[in-house]
Length: 483
Image (cartoon, rainbow, N blue to C red; front, side, top):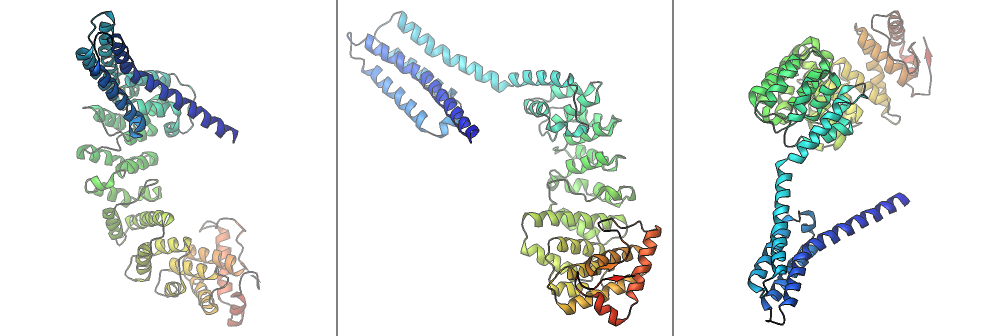
């Protein structure tokens, strides 16, 4: 509380001194006109100078009372007041001596100095000087994060990125540095840069294509993530096939940053990446914090119906996209569309499974949809999701729970060890049947001896009589079976 109070006092003091400074600078022309009016009062009535003083004070009053003017540079108001004061002195001052020349010199010279300073600032020279200083500081830095891509959060790199607003040359000069940390920091300072001078983006592309270190390639790809040139974007899309997963993720983030502008150019490269079995463990093609554009959603939905690796990757990507949407806000229209896809037998099985998991996580599966998902024609994984959801409801429909237990018995008899292990996990957690799976432990490998033992116990449970079925269907905390 005391820190907040002291901060408010400090801000008040800073604002007070800032306002006083503006007032003093803007009062100088009025002071010169006032002195000139007093000096010439005995010789003539300086009505013109008095009018100039009134004009100056009105402009000052408007400047101080206007809230918008406090957020604007003082230069335009200063030039207006000083140069108009020269005109008032020129025509209204009847005394021509050293004070008159001094006043005109100050009132003309000071705006020229302000204009020159403003021109210097707008030329970018001070920022270029700061950029060179920060570049030298980065080149001499010794302490770096273990993950070099995290250099983007370093205060020096953030300040360096801000100082490169006018020109990227200071960062490009560091790309020949012998230390990899310095090169990565320079590239991350150019991350998603939009304004490049001729030849600069091409030079960074050459760095990305020739670098041997994956982290350098990834940083260079991220630096080119805001381009609009089709040739450069298509060249960037080639990094989707890079041997390093780190580089491939950087390429996805860079290419989908403004996906609505270049999807037609990168669509084939994305499809090739999703079809390649070498990249099946890359996960969904969705950059952190972003969503798919409608064209991508339509293409991904169509790819789910194809054979091979592309269908699984496309379904996983769509599920991640919808999950991100639903984490922000559960849209009834989206929920209705997902329900329709889940209930439609024509929907690709991989997509139905991913959407079923999504609905289960967000707890929006109702009894009607769950009953449809228990149908024998539904994919086994989706039926297993429905069984677990039903049995996890402590106050669910007893008839539906009985159907779910029967469905688990059917799934246990399927000649698929992976499905059998998933079924055993649900049976042990939701029905309290001890099948030999360690509490809180992951499922054993499919081809392990423990997995075979779990499957045998599951089959023994599934082949029990109807009277034992009723007991095994008791809610969690009821009867337990030891096989």
